[in-house]
Image 1 (cartoon, rainbow, N blue to C red):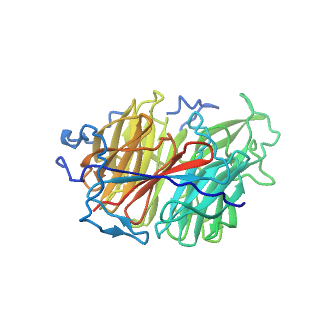
Image 2 (cartoon, rainbow, N blue to C red):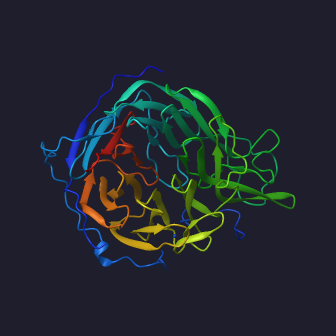
Image 3 (tube, helix red, strand yellow):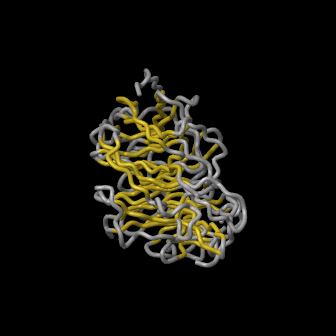
Length: 457
């Protein structure tokens, strides 16, 4: 596919200088509606100190970084500022991208971004013709070369390394002819990893659900993608890639079958083979489950997973269940990403009733709760350099953001704005140079906005 001429517009906004502030499986029903599968929690863990609250939002100053601080970071030479600097780039696409739609938890994800070790990116977007497109972005966040395309129903995530990367997509599958015990039939699909090389060409593909020539979606024991929530994320340990996603679960009930919903984590090696018996993988973890989040911890040499679940209505670690934060099943329980803490453990963001909290945990129960100033049902969290993390959320027609110390959880600097349209289920990605970037809707269906928060010193 030939790439069209590219139109790129950059916008830069600078936030206030960063300074630390403050002290511091039970049986389930046959079907579940997306609204019912989402949970308040007054956590039973340690309360947040009031001084850790985020300051009142302030507009992003329009001044540029001081010319006396010309430091840069990484192979791309991105400028390092005293405070967050946001750069947005409008990228013209050679093929249309699917719109945001209703942004529900069963709706398709339009786009995903992956960071390479050198600071460039891979941009994946869901087309309007049964394909997922994949293009390479240079250091300037502009599309380079000719994008490739892959047959797919939905896009889930993309992950990159020095030699290419992996796409996670859903593809068509077969339901078979076993009758359902109730409800209406819906298309049965598979979840597939696609390994691509440095030019974006496919190297191998591997199904991480379990349909086959002898097992259809409505056969007992099937793990497949149905209308249920099935969004997924990828993580890599440097040799293997893990996929964590929502899955449908088929259980025989006499002469018919019931279709339940949970989550599943599978690990695939560099050759495209399933790593059978991997200590962190599981057939089903949380059920029912949504907002499946995963990160690889090189310090503990393990993949760490977190879900939101209506099993006791909580944010939890699966397989086995360990409660991180208690919630309620009022339709607003949402898990908003998972990152490594600076020294030990992890931070996860979550929301209930538009109140966003950060929880620090190591195994199970949170040991630190930070009540944030964000009023959002769908927060995002991403690692931001070696000592910070970035919490973002929808604010008007754009996004608001707040940096936190990833050791203490204290706020760092003031809130600032990101002039890009939020999506409930898309993710920021952190880069080795200390920046973080997000793919957002552009001005039309042939543009995507790349919003990059530059590194800080």
